Image (tube, rainbow, N blue to C red; front, side):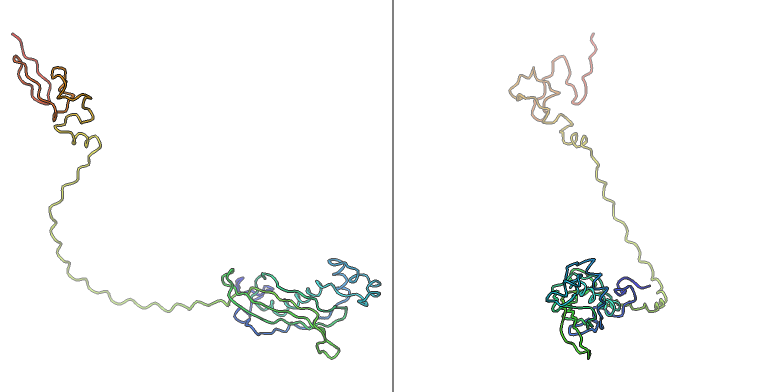
Length: 269
């Protein structure tokens, strides 16, 4: 199937590509004969100035008769450009023109030789895969002997053309796989060393308990006053820091209570 990159300007398979449009190349676009009725109809539709449409006024003027609209003349150039070049070339759009000059009047019945010259070519920086070609188009009036008499139109413009597609090389046949090498004897596995003890997964609550000496209250639970300056009788041993408080004096009639557990009531006689 023909892809858009390989179509010509008229949609047919392209035979000319960017690489073919080299500077110095001249392309003959044929000879155009100006049709008087078409010339006036174009002017009436698009450029109805009196020297294009009014036969009497134009005949009495310095023009000596009707002359073609310049835009009609450049339209004739464009049609010749499409018929003889863009219909064969992988043409894309055009970024514009730099010059358009009407150098002499064009009249009904004139025979105009049309050509285009390639002035420059470079890969496009705006459109990957395309090349920008700089062209000059000219139209020359021919005399009765088909020799050029006068240049009537000149234009300089640019066109985008697709680069010639590169065909991928066909893949060669796959090489047959060689015989598989026999597997050698398996090396004895090294004895596993003693397993490291698993790391303890301590929650925040566990860490706070583990950081407490003798699982007592933390420093944040210490009373505001210094236990050393407070009255031992008024100090609560359960709320003080065991590292900084002195052991409470035991009562002569009560044995000392073991640390970390509640006191048991002694039976009375």
